[in-house]
Length: 155
Image (cartoon, rainbow, N blue to C red; front, side, top):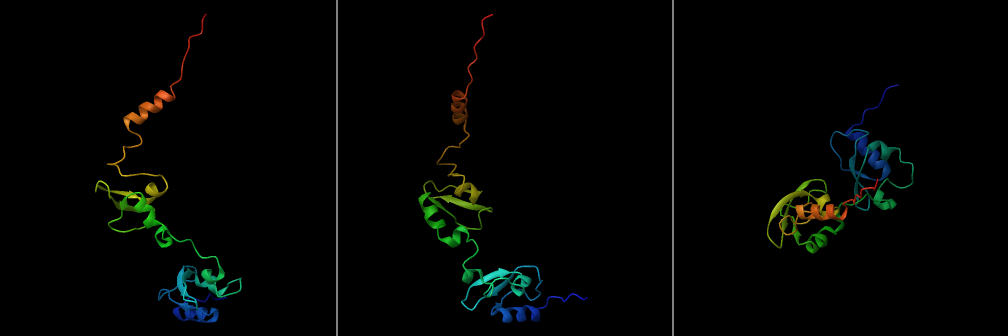
C-alpha cells in the first residue's frame, strides 16, 4: 500500500471539503500545524490530518466550536493596564513571557532586560527603585528570625 504524500492541492481539497480556506505554507506536511480560515473569518492552526479526519461536527475551527486556544497576555488586553500600574514600559514591545525583553521604569527612567515571567508572576520590580529581595539587610533579618536557640544541658 502506498502512502499518499501531502501536496498543496491535497491541502486545498481538504480545506474545501471542510468548508475552510487553506492559508498555510506552499509545502504542507500532514502532521505539521498549518493556517486555516473558517467561513466566519477566524484564522487558526491545525495539522491537515486533523482537519481531514475531524471527529466532531463542524469544520474544525476551535473558535466556532467554542474551544479557542489560549491567548497570550498582549492579545488579551491585560498587559497594558498591568504595566501602567507597575510604572513600567516596553520600549521594544512584547515578545512573549519567556523572552528577555527591554523594560523601562517610568519613575526613574532606568532600563534593564528581563523575561516577563519574572515581572508578571514573580513580582520583580525595577532594580533601581526597589532594593533587591536578597540584599544583605534582607538576609540578616531572615537569619535573626530563624536563628535557633541552643541551651546546654546540665550534667
